[in-house]
Image 1 (cartoon, rainbow, N blue to C red):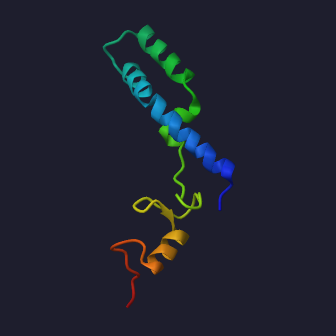
Image 2 (image 1 turned 45 degrees about the horizontal axis):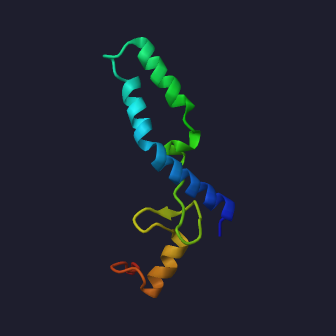
Image 3 (image 1 turned 60 degrees about the vertical axis):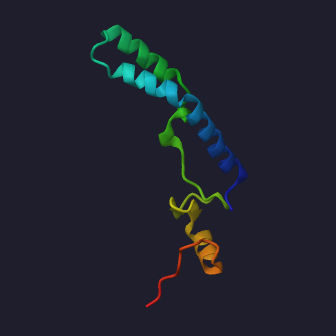
Length: 101
């Protein structure tokens, strides 16, 4: 089980990413637009850099929905390898079967 503070930090980041997504995309488009003057692009860059760091999607970390574990995460299921194996053995995940040969 991950620390509650780490999980809460990720939740806070997700909210910030959603809140600033449109504004970030708009400013990024202005910064890369060659039709605008240099000063306008610089102003857009200045506003972009003034946004909170945690509003960037690349700062988010995938974590297990049950335990908050950051490593061994399977995107398809939203679980870490440990919990995925437990639930697969119980038969809680439809269509998932253990391999055997």
